Amino acid sequence: MKWNKAVLSLTPYQPGKSIEAVKRQYGLEKITKLASNENPFGCSAEVKKAIAAYADSFAIYPDGYATLLREAVAEHVGVNEKQLIFGNGSDENIQIISRSLLDSSKNTVMATPSFSQYRHNAILEGAEVREIPLIDGAHNLEGMLAAIDENTAVVWVCTPNNPTGVYIDEASLRQFLNQVPEDVLVVLDEAYSEYAVAEDYPKTEKWIETYKNIIVLRTFSKAYGLASLRIGYGIADEDIIQKLDPAREPFNANTMGQMAAKIALQDQVFIERCRYENRQGLEQYYTFCQEENLSYYPSQANFILIDFKIDSDEVFQYLLENGYITRSGKGLGFPTSLRITVGSKEQNSEIIAVIKEFLTLQKSLTK
Ligand SMILES: *Cc1c(COP(=O)(O)O)cnc(C)c1O
Figure 1 (cartoon, rainbow, N blue to C red):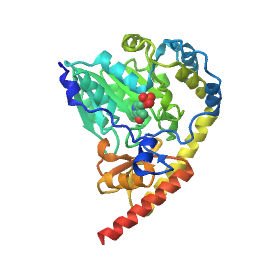
Figure 2: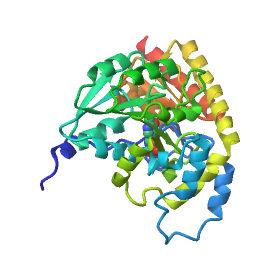
Figure 3: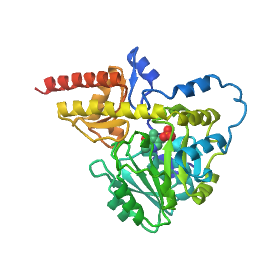
Figure 4: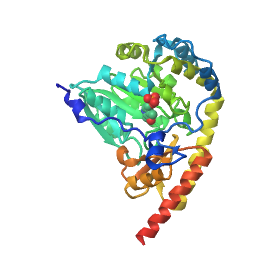
């Protein structure tokens, strides 16, 4: 068959291992998944109630305009309803952007390592990918600026960055945006913004008034705990939203997801609690890393990347066999690090104890 070359050059996205698969493979009863930055506290109890009561409209197509959710997000974010686009997760918004702006005559600039889907979608569109290495886990914004030329269509900025958790402060981000040509779309992927607590982490919702060439991507998959319902949204100038809309599948955001996201948005007490617990959890890991002399990046997200200075698959495998699914840095561009999602206090203590076991074993072997 006449497959596109780009398709043949790619491998499918490697998700974190599923709980069921690990249970079966290792004959374990209890599995803790800290691999995909999902919320260990689930979602708002209000969402669970509403979903339990919902059974009427499986036969009816979703609202393609996501009217009720759109109203709720517009109010929450403080923008106009026409400045929003909804996707089947941020993943789909990334796809829509790529499809609308990239082709073989253009290039796209991004940091590396960063979220894999920017590169993946760019390759599918046949665009040239310009990857600028991180410096100490952070975007090299000057390097990214230097890589932009007249054929650059999209620049991807992930803050806090997945998989390092490092963020871009307000002044640096503004300085960067001030220098990007106006005809280049800058995507600010803020999948973890709800977890960020740094005082200079920018609140970018209103920046679309100043910068007509940005789109801010947010998702209900992480802090809101609705990863399985697949809802993400983009905030941008109305003109950008209009141009992107034809590349969106007509019924992309499903009915349950729209309903759940709207209710979840109303429960900001839940989000505050998750943000607080996440900070406490990160402190558990920081203390552990300091005790064990392991280096890590201070994180503004709900995960931590820890450098074990050995093949990361070894730590990953040891944890897996003990019932903990994490993410080996091998596939993420950090071959000696492990990315661990911050869990509940108990989950963190448990996994830290198992990692300590592993380190003790390592030390006895290398003696
Ligand atoms: C998880 C993640 C996404 C994808 O989110 P979905 O809304 O579940 O598709 C996008 N960007 C980053 C940086 C992520 O970590």
